[in-house]
Amino acid sequence: MTITLMIYAVLVLALTIAELTEHRRAQCVLKPLAALGFLFIAFSSTALLTTYGLIIFAGLAACAVGDVLLLSRNSRKLFLAGMAAFALGHIAYVSAFLTLQSGTYSTGRVVLSAVVIAGTIGFYIWLKPKLPQDMRIAVGLYTLIILVMVVSALGLPPLAYSRLAMIGAVMFAVSDMFVARDRFVTRTPKNALAITPLYFGAQALIAVSAKVVF
Image (cartoon, rainbow, N blue to C red; front, side, top):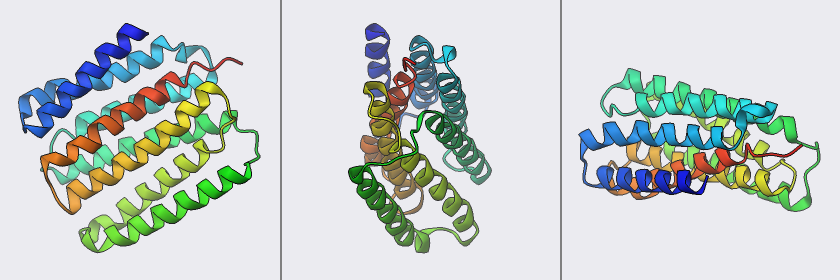
């Protein structure tokens, strides 16, 4: 696992550099490889041996498809298809997280969930005027799905591996905020400094969380 994570980190670093330098060919090679990387991490974490792990693996696979679809930066149809693939990934994560929930939230988790909800609503209110009219509903629905995913992750039991999923869920949401900024507000290669490490770091943490012992 350690060697796998090291190779994965190198791939993510190389992809970040390729995006900063706008090297499209390198991006087209490195991004699918990095996506395969988080799938392999999940597999190495015995993801296929538990219900939770299987659902997480399905979510990771959906996100990997989304990564490939979003390689194109100019196709609206591919962007929507990629967003749909990621939405399916988030829904899978929600389903997985619900299999482990105890049904109770501590006071701290309730407060944190309230902060996440308020922050997400505030972000969408800020973003909405900048969205094309025909994208507002789709982006709004996607934002809602991300919100549900993060809040459901915050309901996971306080176990070592489930904490990784919680952190990963939050990182994923923050990464998506920067994706929205890059797509609809200010497109600049510098956004990759936040998007790529946060996103692939999140997927790795969620993948490793499949190493749950029942």
